[in-house]
Each structure stands twice: as C-alpha cells, then as structure tokens.
Length: 106
Length: 178
Image (cartoon, rainbow over all chains, first blue to last red):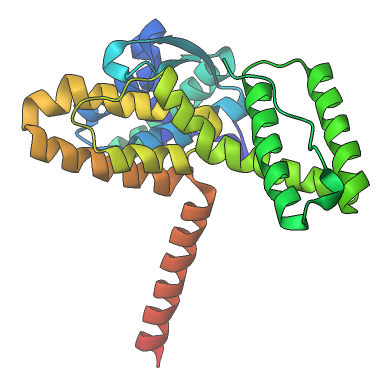
C-alpha cells in the first residue's frame, strides 16, 4: 500500500464493516454497522462514494441482489472485500499500530 | 406492451416544419420506448434508417441533425421518463416516504444507483427510522439523507458545493486579510 493507495480512515471503517458482515454487506447493513460501532451518523451517499472508490482500486467487488417489499421492489447491491482489500487493510492497521507504539514509548 | 411506432407520415410534403418536428418527437420517443423494452438492435437500426430517409427527404434536415435530435430525446427519456415508468411498473412506492425526495433521488442519481440507494433509504426508513422516531422525524431524516446523498453522489451538485465553499473561504480570507 503506497502513496495514493493508502487507506483513509473512513475507507478503513468501510472495509472493516465488510469483513464483519461477510455475505450480508449492502448499503443499509454497512451504514448501520459503522453507525453502531463508531457512533457516527454517516449518509448513504458517503458510504457509496467510498465503496465506489474502493471498487475502482480493486479492493471490493459488488453484485446486484434481490429486492424486498420494504425496499419498494428495488434491488440491493452486495459488496465483498477482495484479497487486495484485505492486504491494504492489514498494512494500514499495522502502520497505525506501529505509530501507536511510538505514543506509548514517548 | 407498446404497439409499433407509426413510421408513415402521409402527405409529408405539405407538412410545415413545426408539424414535422412534432412528429419526429413522437416517433423518436416511441423508438426509445421500444429500445428500452427490448427491440433488437437490428430492428432499431432499420427503424432509424426509415426515419432518416423519410424526414431528410421532406424537411431538408441532414442525417446528423436528425441523429442529434434522436439522441437528445433518448437522453431526456433515460433521465426523466424511464425512472417514472420503472416506478409505475417494477417498484412500488413506499408508504410514508416523501414523494418529492424520491423524485429528486431519481432525477439526480446516476442510472446505476437509482435502484440501490433509494432502496436502501426506503428499507432503513421502513424498518428502523419510522418505528423508532415516528412519522414526522422519519420524514425529516429521509429528506436529510436525500440531500446529503445527492450532494455527495451527483457530480454537478458536488462541484457547486465545493466551489461554493471555496468561494466563501476566499471571501472570509479576504475579509480577515483586508
């Protein structure tokens, strides 16, 4: 993970949500997961903008799913984290952990 | 299912340009409807060919002009008419959601997102927000989410927002500096 490919804070949160949700990761569940665990009220627009960016980088993939009555017949878009995404996530977390070590040492 | 578009124009030589223009609009819209509803590429090409030949012969328009007119109609159809048709056929309206907000989402979101994002908003509205906060606050939540979503997902709105904030920042900077 170098230069512009480094994960931002929100990108990291979205990827972590995908890891936790596994096969059930779509807009509603991703947003809910982030909101419940961080206490941040995020918009669907922000979630989708980040997912789109991550998909462009090859970190996540998506597929159209089924629709349900409470969605008014509209389809869900399911997201899945891919191997480069897991790698990027691990490297970012290692970088953060090493910086955290400096705080303890200092 | 829609019927076949009427491609014959009767006594075309006597028709004024406005009338021809009106007929072209009608035919172009019918063609687009057929295209969207699954007419094959070959059939569509054939129809467009007939349209070009007929109209360019009697109105003096070039193929390029006709093509541009057709494309413009197509874009208008894709942007405004098709989402409305989809609402009427595939998607049922969600009880309680603000209709204007739904219309704005259909209007400003990209084609690929018109099903997923409004669907997510509707699901969250129905299953979580409405039972927890009641109708009034849920509608307010829906509107807030709609505006935030459009501001972040529509490139023009995003540009206006960023440009506007930059201008305000510059103005504040000048006021402080001057």
